[in-house]
Length: 116
Image 1 (cartoon, helix red, strand yellow):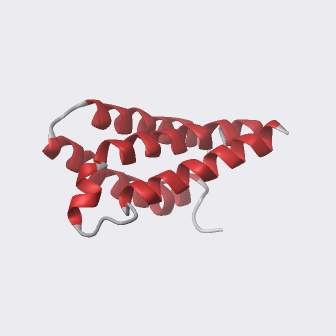
Image 2 (tube, rainbow, N blue to C red):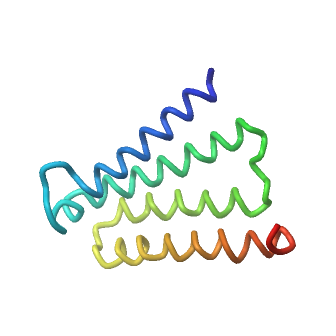
């Protein structure tokens, strides 16, 4: 039951990220810019719920780099949401896809002994 609840909350957090990035009724860059902090908090919530969901499945340290990598995304997203410097927020937001790409395709493949 708790696993389903966490999965439902994780799904809702993903939906909030999508709505904050592309708010209904708002066109163009202004929609995202007005909701940047909501996006960052929703990203942090999604990552935190992903950690909880992974722990409930008993795979929190598989691979061993999972917990430090995902938890640093939570911390960075919350820091970016707390600060008011637009440049810093954009740099952190740009760092996310680069770090996810690196972790997904380079680090994980190397940690698992290459492509499986």
